[in-house]
Structures are given as C-alpha cells and as structure tokens.
Amino acid sequence: MTVFSTTRPLLSCAIIGSALMLNCASFSASAALSKQNLANSGYWGGILLPNDTAINASELNSIYNRFVDNYIVDAGTDMARVKWGSGGALRDGSGNVSKDAYATASEGMGYGMLVTAYGDDKTRFDKLFRFYRKTLDDNNADLMPWLVWSNASPVTNDICYGIVGQSQTCFGAGGGGPATDGDIDIAMALFVAADKWDNPDIDYRAEAIHIVNELHDNWLHWCADDGGTWVVKPYQKSNFDPCKDEIDASYSIPAFFRYFAEVAAVDSSVKNANDRWNSAARDLYSKLLDKQKAGPNGDKTFVPDWMKLDGSAVTGRSTNYGSDASRIPWRVTMDYAWYGSSESQDWTRRLINDLVNNSNNGGIADINADISQATGNSAGYNGRSFSGGFAVAAMLYNWYPDNANDYTEHWVDETLNGSLPWNIGANGYENANNDYYGMALSALYALTLTGNTYKPALN
Picture 1 (cartoon, rainbow, N blue to C red):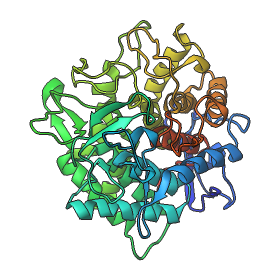
Picture 2 (cartoon, helix red, strand yellow):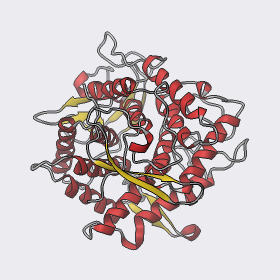
Picture 3 (tube, rainbow, N blue to C red):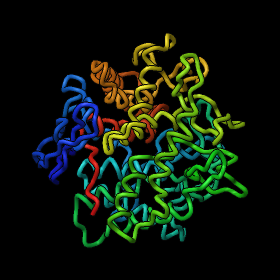
C-alpha cells in the first residue's frame, strides 16, 4: 500500500488580483503528507482544491491502490505492465481467453508511469519502464507500439470488448505502430522520475529527452491551412494526413508541451525548433477546442473524440463527447495548474457553464458518458473518466466554489461505492465496465484533486 509523500522543494505561486503578479515561496512538504494543501501544491492561484469532506487522504490512497494493485501486473523478470482489463482481453474463435492474455496499451503505460511517479512508487515505476524499454528494443522502435502482448510483441489481430459469452464489440488492433498520447505521457513521467529519484541503472532524464526529440521531429505535424497549425499526428498509417483526415484533440497536452519547451530553454539537447512545443500548446485552444462552440447553449465544449482540423465530423467516427475527449478537462486544467494560462481557464469555465446551464444534464450526478454536441444528451451509461474530468475542471470554477467540492464528492462516491464496481467476478474477469482507462484516470484525477501532480524541476 502506498502512502503519498512529496519530499522535494516545490514553488508555490499565487495570482494576486487580476494581474499576473506572483507571490512565490519555497517549501518542503511533510514526508508523511498524503494530501497537499493549496499553498503546498505548486499549483497556481485560482485553483480550488476540494476540501477533506469531498476527498481525503484515505480516499486518495484507496483510489490509487485499487488501480496499481489490480492493473499493474508483473511481466517477466523485474518488469511490469498495465493490463487492459476485461475490455481488452484477446479471445480465440470460441470466445475463450486466458487471464494472462490481456493486452497492454502504450496509453495505459503512460498513465501507469505518471501515477506511480507522482505516487512516489519507484519500484513499480522502474518495472513499468523496463517493460516499456523492452517494447522498443524488441521491435527496433523509437516509440512504443500502441498495443502489445505480455511479451512486448505488437498485437495485430482483433481486440474485443465484453465478457466471454456476452455480446462483444471487436476492432482491428492496427498492427505495431504507436499511439502518440502514450509516449507523451511516458516522457513526462520520466521527467517527474528524474526530479524525484536517482537511479544508476536508468537515466530517466535522458530517456525522456529521447522521446521528446522523436516526437518533435516526427509526430508534431505542421498543417499550413488556416494560417498554420501544429497538431499531434495520432498514429502511423499509409497515406494518412492529419491535416485532412482526422486528429484527436486529447492527444495535445498543453502543460506537458509547455514544460518540454521550458526544458529545451535550459538544455540544448532538447529540440524545440521555432518554439514548436509552445506553438502546439497554443494551437490546441485556438485551432481545435475553440472551434467547438456550436450547440444549444452557443458555447458548447463537448469536443468529439475525433475531428478534422476544420472542425467538421469524421466519417465513421462518433461526433459525441466520448471517452477520449473525457480526459481533455484534466489535460486543460493541468495547463492552468502549472502555467496559469488564460486559455485553459476560459475553456474550463465554458465547460462548467455547459454543464450547469444544460437542462438535459444539470448537476454532475445526472451526467453520463458519450454526450451529444448538438443536444447535450448522453448515451445513458456511466464512466469515471467523464465525471472525474468535470470534477477536476471545477477546480477553476472560482465564481461557484461549491462545485469544486460537490463535483468531487459525487465522483469519489461513484468511484468507490457506486455503480461501477472494482470487483473481480467468480469467472476471474473484471466487471465489463472496468479496464485500465477509467481506473488509471481515476488515480490521476485523485492525485490532481489533492495537489500532488506538481510541475517537476527543469534540470
């Protein structure tokens, strides 16, 4: 069981009034402290950390341990991986699957490494990193294949959702190419690890820089239309053009991009040609999120999972605010927590307005997954990644501070006691709603809501 600690000195900064003046003081948190107060979080002023009634240290540890104990599994000698869970069990033609056959996504590895880095869980982190390195070494790759078996080989056959014997939905795994969001998170997790720990066997910082430079050279993509936009190329495919075909806004991670730019400013080995990283952070708002304003309230922020750069729908993709998009509020709130960006505060303000003012949803207790852009209606099923993302966004809703507590309290209760159980059934498989995605994001949300996801030092 992990008890969180933050032993490094952090910088606490607050915005005074409406001007961007900083009041900063260094501090060292208690080694036994599991929930930071706002002054000790390293977050910008204007953040409303939920109080101990909404989420306390015990609840934080429960959410954290339920993820790491159930979804981080050993994978050979001194390695570990984040298993997908029931949603990612690979089955044969008869629908049978071994419990050891669960797939591992690079996205899950990124989440797992962020969670264990911020959870001060070095043993698990190092095991995860070694598995990540094996996926690169075995496949002669610069980035991790997006979906691999427990032996680190890329998955190339179909992957199916659903419990054995029940209705299943299958899709092609797409071969061995990367999915960029996972590697961005892995790079950031390595920078956090470099800030926290020394390890003679793993040069965390050098490993992070290798990923950042590969992303810079080959996966930040320039689109000339509309005055020019930097987008994240989400995957590799023959004749694929992210400028014309599709992009996933949740793959653009503004806080991490700004951090990479800051590291590049103090370390010439980190690439940032023409301020590419800061430009990509800026363009997320001005060229992607700000195009999603159509809807019944005229200010809709329910971004679709996949979209075209011109804001139009992608054929064959849902136009709803789905599971990919559900993490955007957390991504955007982190941008404010680390950098106090006005764009992040404006977008989260519009998001919460959409929730509060939409008669179809109302309070967070009535919000379910897959929200329609046009109507605000949802598909009627629940999902931790949705309500947790809204709880994190409410931290910036400073003209209605009760939301920061109310939204968090509802999400914590839903996560620990609600309709999405963590149990493993008698057949050895997790509940059909449970996979790494919601579980890992729950741990990240809990860490963020308790002031633990600080910006690491630059060198």
